[in-house]
Length: 174
Image 1 (tube, rainbow, N blue to C red):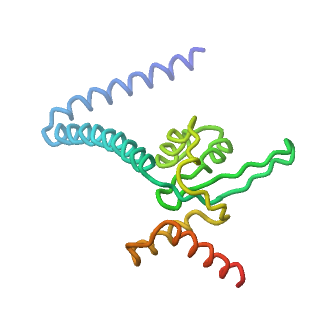
Image 2 (cartoon, helix red, strand yellow; image 1 turned 90 degrees about the vertical axis):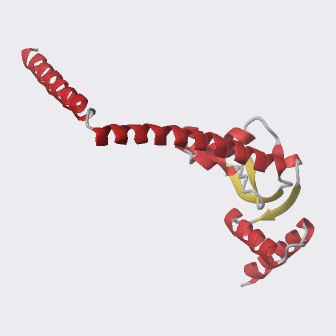
């Protein structure tokens, strides 16, 4: 017990000395400026995250989704299957539910995934837009969509879907 108490007191003394030195350093103008900038940066980062979340929600709300099936999950223990869909236009992806359940927390999701999760949780967003029933990789389909839109400004969603279906058939034949 005495040795633990001695260790504790030693650490307490060392920390006290460090805090005194930190307070002395804070009197230095360069270090003061560093702390001011650090605090401002933290505040701006927080504001940026808040705005990012609002921008993504507006993007998801205004998107006339084109849904593709991104994952078919079958649970043999429970005998149920789930289909997860993603939008090739805005990137909204229902797989965040499967990922968060695997990780057992939304805290481990990326910021973008957390925004998606929070946006879709409690909403049934698949009614909005077009469900193509196409099974494919979401990133591949999104890249295809982006490239088509860049090259053909006047192409409509139905034409994109037809071209995506045809190109996926060609890929599967190879």
